Length: 302
Image (cartoon, rainbow, N blue to C red; front, top):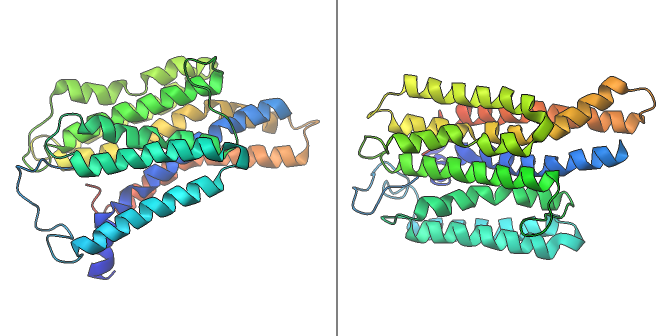
């Protein structure tokens, strides 16, 4: 890999991309259950600049980085709107605009301000609704009456926001060492709790994946003690994002499995769809995590 290409991948946090795909995929999968039922970090300005990063190291010019950043943001917005069904393009455009604004606000004002982690959390929380809307489902949030999928989506958004908020607070200590406090660490462990309430009868699915999530956090804490382990802990927290995403897919897994078990009287196309959805649900989180863990060996996550 050329130093220039590696510099771009480090600058764009390329190793974290699978977690973004997982966030959007989780939102896209959620309405598939409904269809089946019907059919059947950064550091404050006062800290020293890290000379090994691509721009200070001279691998990438500031102007090139700005053009690439604005270009990627614009292209992502356009492709997202075009991917949406015609009836929902205005709604998707509104959500995509909110996401783009959060990205710009965080990048411009995150250094040295207390509210920046909350904005970074919104950058994550707004990803699943885009997948949900692109799948062709309308999202009815408060104060309108909400269905099961809406409650799950709201809980998923809150869980991602809380996890990202806590990760960003921890990441602020990466350059100096130390910790963000036990209360911040506690936020990481309670992030899945709202989804236990939202998924209703599918709590065994939540129990399984939240157990894996808690095990991953405890394992990370033991392997990377503070103060030296801040950066490694942040990277592990970022890799855990797909585990939050898969917790929302209990509906899809249950309906798909029920169709595959029943089989008799079920159309072959429906069985094929159910098999593909079950494979996506069960395999997406481990696959995304595996990609993150593999890619971050060459491209730092933070």
